[in-house]
Length: 238
Image 1 (cartoon, rainbow, N blue to C red):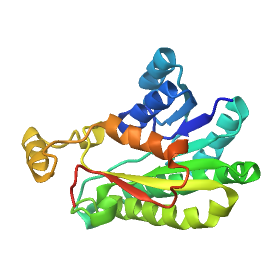
Image 2: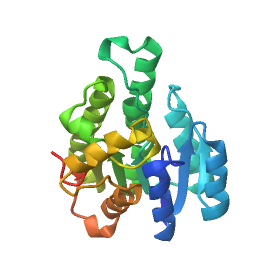
Image 3: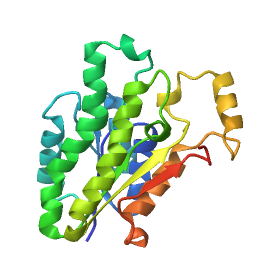
């Protein structure tokens, strides 16, 4: 029987790469997107990835998304919580709206999408959840304080939930990417990227496909005794 996977924030970067990799591995693959309708349409036509519109800045969006995916495709075997936004600014200069958005998307979106799917996984005594954090959730980043807080909280959420649902046969893990060549880092100049490459022990920037393959490994039977872990995909950066 084919497994059903849902990747939130699946039209770009790590989410997109993960969706394509899962299709290659035989999953029925759904993605959520907020605004990237054209990219979602392309992925649907080119790879048979099934798109669902959901804006996690809205309170009930995660619940509605899980309901729609389950109704159309069936119960979800793999949830990849990837949707995220980054706002670069001095801590005290973020607006109330920006603060609300970054917590709603990065943290509460992850928590509520998981809360919406966990009952069906518990009832089957099987399921896998992979959360996407960030190196900044581990070490913090200047001018990305709230982003760092949300990603650090995702790590804590992963570890706690894994202990709670392990007896129900559900595995929960987390990937923590370093600097990856995605649109989220497009604000960095060529000089910035060069400097970051030089600071990385492997002397280069990571690729979205490398994070995607780590996510797929954690979702696979090869990782059947791995739960509650944070896998850093960062080229050795500490």
